Length: 398
Picture 1: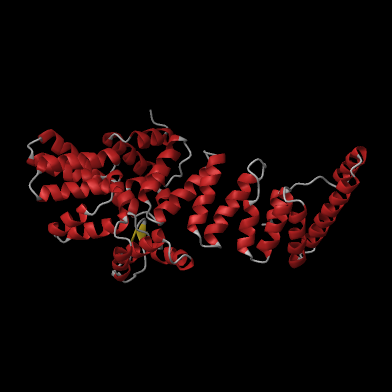
Picture 2: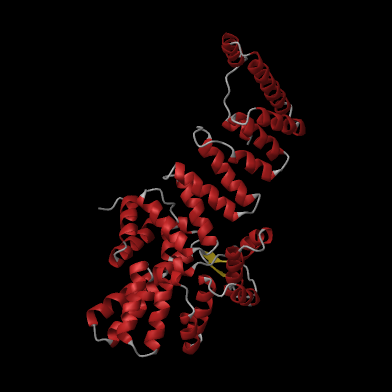
C-alpha cells in the first residue's frame, strides 16, 4: 500500500499554485512568492521521484519539502512513504507523527503509525502511546481499543486491560474478544507470549514491564504441552531463572509478587505467603487478586470472617473472578451461611467452566452465541453491570 497515494488527495494540475501566485502578486509579496516557488519545486521533484519509484531521490526531496513547508501534511506523508519504501521504519513513524490532529487524514495516519510501532519497530510502549493519543481524538475508535486491550494483555498489565475493556464496553466499541479477556483476566497465558514479548524485550532490555512479562511467560509455560490462553501450543521448557532475576530487580512489581504468592499457595507454604503479603505496595489494593490472596492467608490463620471480607473485596473489584467466588463459597459454609455458600459455589463452578471453554478456543473472538449467552448469564449473576450491558447490546437481549 502506498501511504502517500492512500492518504493524499491534491488538486489536479497547477491551478492551486496559479491561484496562490495571483494572491501573492496582489499583496506585493515578491519574497514570499520566491519562497512558495521553492516549496513547489521541492514538492514537484518529490512527486516525480515517487512516480518513477526513485525512492532515495524521493526521500531527499521530501526532506527538503518538509524543511521548506513543515506545516504541509502532504510533505510529511511523502516523507513517510519514501522512508517506508526504503524500510526506514523510524523515519516513517516520525513522519506520521507530524500529521496534525486537525487534519482529516490524522486518524488513518496514526492507525498506520500504531501498527508500525509494534510490528516494525517492536516498541509496544510507543504503540500504546500512539493508540492512547488516537483515543483522545476519537474516543470510540474500535481499532484503538482493540489494539490497546491486546497490548495490555500481552504485557500482563491486567489493571489497564480491564479498565480499557470496560471503557470500550461503555462506548459500545469493544472487540468481540473483550469478554474472553475479561473473564480470564487472572489467567492470561499465550502460546506466543514468550517469543513475542522476547522480541520486544530485546529491543528494550531495560523495560521493566517487558522483562517481567517475559519472565512470567517463561516460568508458567507447561514443559509438556505448552499451556496457553485460547489453545495449546508447542512445548517450551519452563524457566524460573528470569522470574528470580526480576524478583531481585523489581521486588515490588505486582506481577512478580503475584507469581511468587501463587507459587507459595500452590505449595501450601503459608508462612512465605504471609511474608509476601507484608511486602505489598499500596497499588495492590486496587488489584482483586491480592485481596483473594489475603483471604487465603486469613483462612489459613483460622480467621474466616476476615477472610470472607477479603474475598468480597476481591469480587467488588472484579466480579467475574470465579476463584474468589469459589473461596467465598467455602468460607461461607464454615460460617454456616448456607444460602451464600451455595450461591458462590455455583458461581465458582460456572465461571471455571466458562473460562476453560474460552481458553480452549483458537482465539476468544470465535466464541459462538451460545457461549456468549452463558457469559452474559454468569455476568448477570455476578452483578457485573458493564459486562451485562455490553453483552445485552451485542446479543440483542432485553
